[in-house]
Image 1: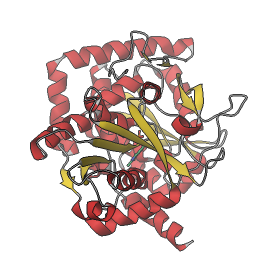
Image 2: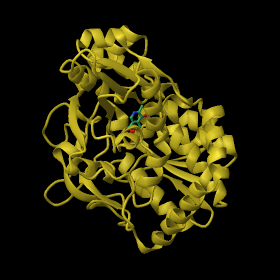
Image 3: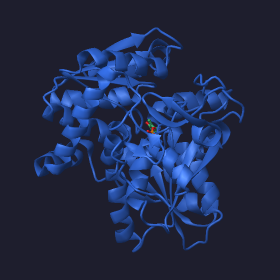
Length: 397
Ligand SMILES: *Cc1c(COP(=O)(O)O)cnc(C)c1O
């Protein structure tokens, strides 16, 4: 069973990953790969990153028992890894501070990023403000309209927001535009991808930066439970919070790993955002992975109540974990996620992100089938402040 946490020399996880990009970007990706390897080998970089994670991000994040949620589920004890307590309210900041420190090391003075709902844009603008780098964020015009508060947050943080008017005016188009910018600006610019997607070495860099979640969590389990957990569950959009908590457990074959995709409103094309469950291998944004696509290979439409899961692709390492059987993937639909959102709020005093609510629903389901002495860890990827208005609308409709 393949559970390796390093890609092969050509940047592949099994058959997946790689580098499907225009020639002009290959040199930039090679420069990035070398810079990342050097940074990882330099204790000074590790010390600086650790200090930032502690003093700015607020790590380590808490490991919280959820006894009332567990009692309602009836079965295993559910534990929460509290990424909602990280600065800016989700795990995304772990990646952006790491890549900003890397960019500074590479002598880059300008950062670009793509964003869908704006969460990655805000986390990038935050890290850039902290370290004094110029920041420009590409966002689909339709997304910018729907998420005007995040556009304003980015501006407060000193970033410039470019609204993209091409295509469906959403994340896919913003990503294309950011790639185009980078092709002409690699000399002074670093592109911060927001999840474990894109061409090699991005999936590896983002997973290694997010692995701080799993490294802390594994130590907290050994400390608090006296042993490893039986099951670890996380939601999967691009797959970065899941890869971050899974990676340090991959070699522990007795720990069951479960990724949860957005089931949306049904199993028909366009109704969900679950490429690992309903998609097929294809190339999207520079790497080979599972993609939602039609017979002609056109990227499919997606739907989820949570903006952070609303993406037609998924990181290549997840594709490999799926095919090797190391991680099990399932779907939770909008309605079940909405119920879980309310359950965690009412029973534990924690309002989760709608993305996280998908993993909560799956945890309730799975805990019910496990014995009382078992332990299930749920990655609480973010807080729900950003979603309360949308949930109010969904509950009233
Ligand atoms: C962005 C986001 C996700 C989805 O992204 P991944 O890369 O799959 O982790 C999940 N939860 C929250 C709170 C997010 O902001």
